[in-house]
Length: 341
Image (tube, rainbow, N blue to C red; front, top):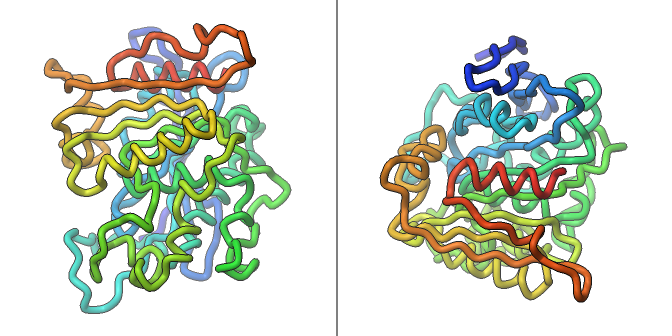
């Protein structure tokens, strides 16, 4: 299926929110396996808004960048530009049965880690290079992702540079910056929905999709798993993080988020964590397209919120630790406003 870039503008809403310029199916990178594209939503406001880069979930093996919340709505509501980006999905060996239905019409290119994070960071740099053209601020960027996309959003925010992923495991050319290499790719904040944070602690299963990501069983490739784990890159320079996870998640254990939050706090990194009681993966929704509705209905989930912040000795944390709205768009919008102002 061939995609051609399209552009349009959504009218301002009756609530007084800004109109949104929509740029769909824009190619940001050409790989041997095929082209990678993004969709971009830019609110038409005075000045240049910050940018949020959304990374879709799907176990690293299925779904597309269209698997996302209503990004046009949130671009207007939060007054931020939002880009939903494609990345190379993991290869599925012939004959392997996985617990997902793969759409045969999904033509997204495939590859093995670190291809996925190479693509996400390439998209960030491509967007930075074209910030003036599209009208957003290249120095105020957050990543946001869900599940597999949360894992990649975390990685993009926690690594200083894509070259850091190589370590002594991958050859430098595997992480070469071929797209807008002059750009920093720096991220100032991260929003994570129930992402995997430490692949070395994922339960062992020969058919586990985490093994597909790294190209072999985790137990036999623990060095690869460590290079692919966000917890590997936590240090005092990490950006502020905002995480949401259901306690009843049977796909990605909430212990994945708890271990990351613990390490962030040990490193004095600001983090806001929402634990949603009795909620499962995707907050019980059928996809990321409808997940936000699970948080905003009449029956809001019971939840626990914890937050930490770092400041100069003796300074007040009142600004850093505000009152937190219930889990949902208001909470995310507040976090983005606080960290990208």
